[in-house]
Image 1: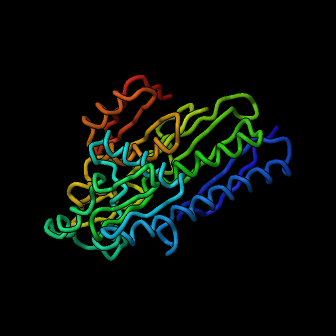
Image 2: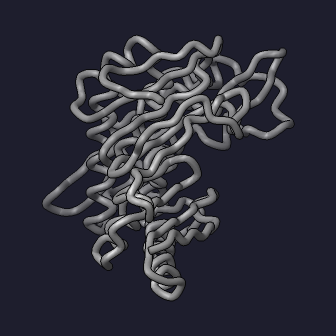
Image 3: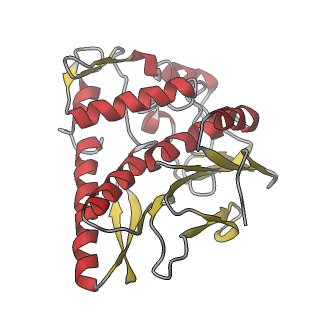
Length: 307
């Protein structure tokens, strides 16, 4: 058995699929299956396609409920559940804030005013996402509200691709969705999969390693997307309550049994801050976290073994 890998651009990110297989033919066929599944998910959940279900929900905000597929309904329902446990630090209705207020390109030279941020922030409220299970509908109460799956979609896609591969007999592999990854089984030599946790100052270097077989890992860091304004670094992670970027935390790495949950929890922990974030993580079974603050100080949740 050998490992075979292929990279593909999906959801605006690089996805790397690695499978352990007997030969190239088997590997290629399975990697293609995984890619097909992730492309399917992208089409369903994208906001870049006018007729996607996500856009139908957004276009009817404040107007009427929209009937959606079970899969879409279920992901929104789970997203709202995560909003509840993070007290709104995770919120898929952040879509209303995206381009109008924040554009993380080099042209951005000043922060939006508190007034501007406040104006848009009132549209971010998971409690205004109305779900009707019987009818299978989703309704955004306020006109102008928008949902988006940027905070959970990559993890969901990785989890679903893994499911397809397992069903097709691939006993070991890794789906790496641009740093949000899920690994199962072991390497061809029988050793567990391990990953390096990136050093936020030198993302190409790892400062420690973690065994991750049968685990999912997601990292949210300001070293990937940020702007410098007045000599200060502002992360692309926005606090949904203020509409302004968070400061103080360089990166959050979440380790969980499920890639979707890991992906969804990485951003809100950054928003909640170190103490509240670690307190929440320590309440949830089989969830672990590593936080690096702006001064490169390392914080970890209970029961975590770095090497």
